[in-house]
Length: 160
Ligand SMILES: [Zn+2]
Image (cartoon, rainbow, N blue to C red):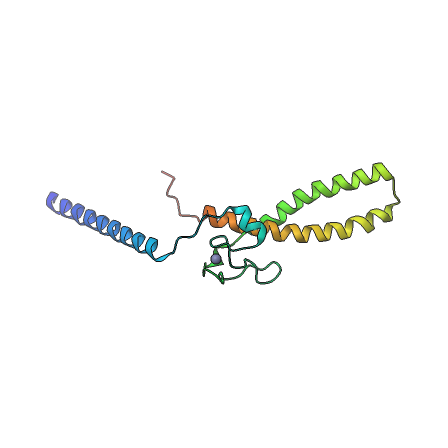
């Protein structure tokens, strides 16, 4: 009985070392097959709408839609999953700026109400479109750099 158990233990040990060695092998292959890219900052690639890895290929295929694969280095962009992130940042930043400006105009010049409508509707629309694209680029670059992913439920591993 005891012999059987030790045999089993040895087998699992062997398996573990085997998987470890294959892991190391695959790591080696990975590092040699991918050419080295100079490091780029999140802001430098995000603000210019360039690929977060090579900073050469375009990040967007249309105004706001990210490309599926970088045209320059072939980076698979399916990881880009920024969700509602850009909208939240745009709302917080622009809300602060535009409300501040509207209050300044109101209390400095006391204009009639239609002036506010003529002023802030186009300004808000233009600035939010512009901000959304920039923030989206920065968030995708940050996601690439930090390897951030959607949280996945892995069962009750932590409960005892
Ligand atoms: Zn690229």
